[in-house]
Length: 214
Image (cartoon, rainbow, N blue to C red; front, side):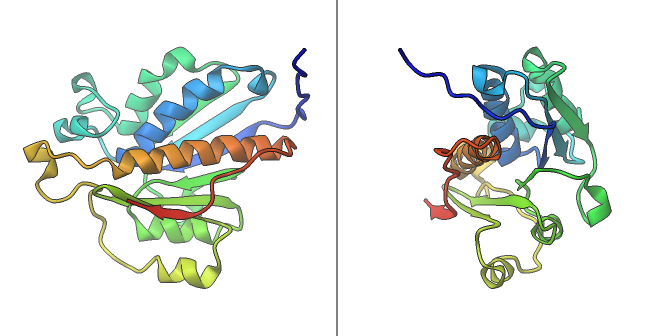
């Protein structure tokens, strides 16, 4: 007979995801159904705050988790609406239709995920003192660093620079979509899930290591 593992009961878990575009929309779209099922999350209350000021454009539907009916809506509201069948009293998405530029833009959180190309958001999260993941992608590759990476390396990887799309120039118009953002989203969903398990005291929890892949 398979042994059922007993998990610690804790306070409500707070997760903050910054960015609801190529990486963020797919990360959340995979994470929410996983949290919705299984005895691991029974009796747990999980609130996910999603930050993004952008609205859905028709071009976004080529590589982000949106459909034509979402065009014109705030991305954070569109995500909450599309995942509503999975949500309830113990699994909550809190849409935050503003960008993160300073510490006061964020609330307290157990886990932070940066899924947007913004050096301001990255630096706010890096300096939070919390448990964080920073996802970047371009074309078919991605980078994932987290709070286990040394501060000097994190600083070197986070210069001041303009934001850019995860797609190469001309990819959306031509249909030559690159899928590095899907790799980054999968890493992020796994990282959140395993960190939640680790917070519950599961000794076999293994958040994925920082990495670069293409």
